[in-house]
Length: 469
Image 1 (cartoon, rainbow, N blue to C red):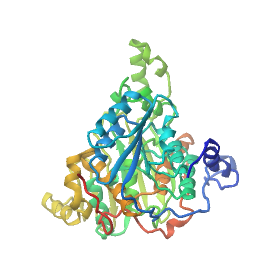
Image 2: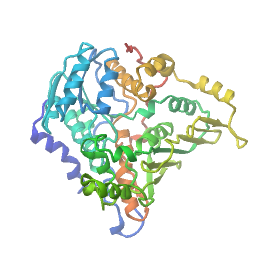
Image 3: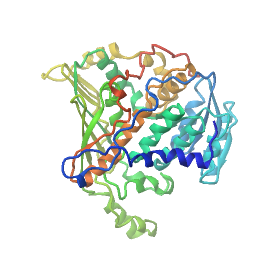
Image 4: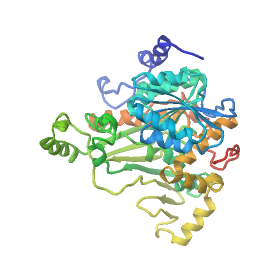
């Protein structure tokens, strides 16, 4: 399946055209108070549970060979049944470094670099099955869409989309092409998160009531580094935008615990941000001694802390926080509370309680953790830790994607997860800008969330045949 520029524009324009006939988000107040976000679309094909034909060898093209992309190379050469056939990066030195590395493991990829559209040539190749995207955020949707319309599965770093219309583009293109679109939410494969998912599925927490997640990570020095992010793209993301710009690490695992899109859905949210107490001042201080920073001084930067509250269709609540500029210890919170118990990961060490009398002892915790450790961890967890990538969760994620594609199995996460989790970004921005008014969260599943069955096969009931080498 090939496409040209005209077809690409036609497909990516479907979402924009459909907004004229689609519903809008309902908020309290008059007509002018309503948020202009498309809410619903009749589902063309249900990608939840969809299994593409199995592949003996998964041929991968990777776009973006910076920090995350190079790490992906290091992991994929250790997974059986992978052939890295193409690499692309705007910087020729990065793509050549990546090619030299994978050649040591028997791969000989074609390379594309030096031009802003060179990545399209990678997507158009006949020897690529999966396009793995590790580029700045604003490129994730157009590159994912272009991969799918060129008959490739797409796996994109987070976030998958920046706007609601980009979310719809991903959904519509995946359904129309029947190609997987997975957001690379590695935290869903972290070890304690998978333990709590297994506990929830076996009823340990009773009926789930409330969850909390976060991305609290002091990135001030990295965001104001001249070398950490190409063209200062991550600092640019924090300039002129105010909301929960990176909610997926905290939100994704909680959504899986609550079967969001698989029996429940996120219904509406409200969002509030503090003012910026730090980034603007840092930019002004740097500009006083270095002309390089003058364009960054005097700007509006996102507030230090954003708190977003979500209510689900069946009445659960979720809190998600985002702070990348305050001097706080790293935390994703990862709290899940039910009618019979609670678990909380941060601040470390992780803890579990089954009553108001306090947390279980260390020995009791270890017993429960051992009892609920899922098969995926027992099978390849230790090897994944050795290969690495955020303690092994990156390797588990990549291994699982490849194993599913080779065995013709549904992926653990799909385009509806990518769209709904990413939608919190623009929806939170709208809420913050409108004095924290509530805003409806679109139903990207077209109503199928009521009958979709949960994914994320942590017990490896099927598959698990691919080796780490």
